[in-house]
Structure formats: structure tokens, C-alpha cells
Image (tube, rainbow, N blue to C red):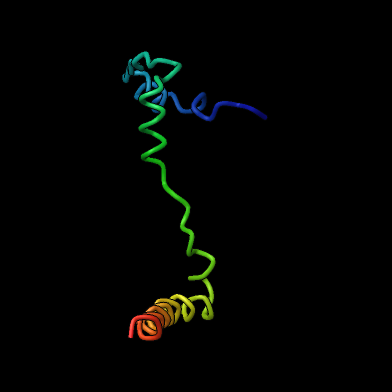
Length: 81
């Protein structure tokens, strides 16, 4: 059941045995600086992913900045004029 398929192919086995690969020795534990750099380089979760997946969310992402800008403009007009 767990038979190696290369046992039946001597030509392929001979070709694979020609290659010798040396695997370099990597440190098993990384330093704090490397872990910090990996943390900085890791991808971040998109906070707007749930909004961008629906039509209402896309509309909200377009309307909310305009409504916020209009609200700030009204605050300036009401309090500073």
C-alpha cells in the first residue's frame, strides 16, 4: 500500500541519485530582533473587508466620508459664524 513508485523505474531512480543536495544548518530559534521584523512584515487584516464585500458596504464607504465632511462644515458654520 505504501510502496515507493520509483522502485519500479530504475532509470528515474538513477537520474535522481545523481543529484546531491546539501541542506544548510539553520538556527532553530530566531532572535528577538528577527521575530520583531517578521511581525512588522506580516500581512495585516483588512478592516474594511466586510464592508467591501457587500453593495451596501461599498455605498457606505462612498457616502460616509462625504457625510462626515458635510457635518464638519455645518459645525464650523454654526459655531464660528
